[in-house]
Image (tube, rainbow, N blue to C red):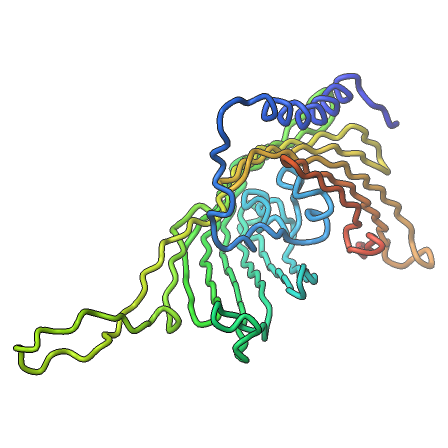
Length: 343
């Protein structure tokens, strides 16, 4: 029998109240804004993975239980019940493209899991413009950004799991390139509150080294003063030199996430989610969403295998200073339905 507890309503109201409260506090701050906007590199690390997490405005860390948990919460990888793989891709702004793929394998009786993931972003054949040639030089350049990571996660009890991801980041910008190393750490905790499931998660993502660039484009000829004419064989002018670049930090993010099943029954479930996040290149933000799941079992020709039909429409919203985004999307990106055969 479905029911909604008064405490559940209070939790849902609290999740929604966090967003305007946080923005109001920022609006009344009399201190100057020292937020380091635009000071990090490899921003594609924040683009997400999978349809469900994207639709929820990235408020997915607490409820992640599929292959995309490799991206959203390494600790939740331990909750994956069977081996699986996932691939997602979409066209981004200005004719750019982002793709992500992952694969995970539970082992040790399901108490541990191992996974691999890769993400790519870039574009090709863009014209080169310079100050001296504002209409174009006739040359073109391409950008290719990639990260690859490996994840290990373990269930320490029937309520708590933790995981760690080590990943390498590669950035090819025209004729210069750079690389960095980063780690993600995440935890997942499950409990009951007023006879309804509640899930909490803590995640730190993209904590690592600075990304520093080098390459042919940084090799220049440096002018120098004429040598002393009394010295034999003075050095030629100009002299070859290499420009040194500043290292750019990766977009490190800290998240605290909560999910609560507001309504539960044998056939359906309504979950509300909240996600507080603080990045090193932006102000603190809040993401929230709700997901509905329903299932029905039926049997083909009375003797055949049972088919479980699952639908999971989700709605999410992300609130950031001067920005609010709302997205509605299904688990598969279109119909949001799947069929799993079981005996």
